[in-house]
Image (cartoon, rainbow, N blue to C red; front, side, top):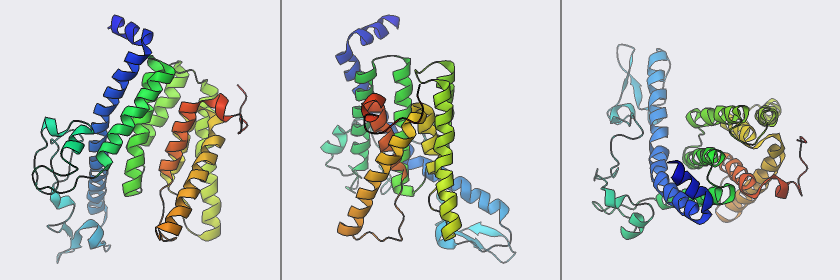
Length: 315
């Protein structure tokens, strides 16, 4: 094992190739997480609703729960609870949601299988979302870039964990307007522990301040907005996402991440309204832009970005 690690450290090209292949394979599993985790979470929420609601009227279209004659609630046949949702991320094996065709191993090769099948299910020819090859290719590219830039070491391995979490959270947020605590909180704590234990080069003081400043910044912005307009200005998942980015990248990363995400988000939002008739009242998830800004900061480095954006904390 030590000989393999030594070879990867001495041969950056081989290490990068291995990282890309690893990223492609893991990206295939990330698609499963993106698909199943929100379903599992919503199923748990609906179960909790059933336990605590005894006299409230539940929105049947959203939950599939209705009141019966004896004053209790039950799930309708087409309710999410009655549909036997996923209970585990890795089981049962993947299948087409339309015809239940079991996905064979040769149909699950990252990117290539989607191209070979021409983006359609082999069983019923239902179109397969382009999300699948995008996630797989993006994961492979980003993992390869991190290994190429930082080398094969413990810190790089931890950065890969961060990237995998950000990719998963990004695509869940795009589809469900949701940044799961199951991803946000473990990544936040891992970033703090990694800096405290010396597993990464980030000083613990900068990591701790990054988490605090990142969370409080959006909390204050949302508090002011809510006070003025009597409604939430942003989701609380964004607080946690900026906090975890601060924990991993340090307090100096907070301002660049806010600026980059705001600029990119504004450009995309304005473009959607001008060219795609996106309604102003319809929310746009901000998590993907925060994640993108964090990845840019990680890949391009503090010294490059801080030529334009001054650091908040001098280390």
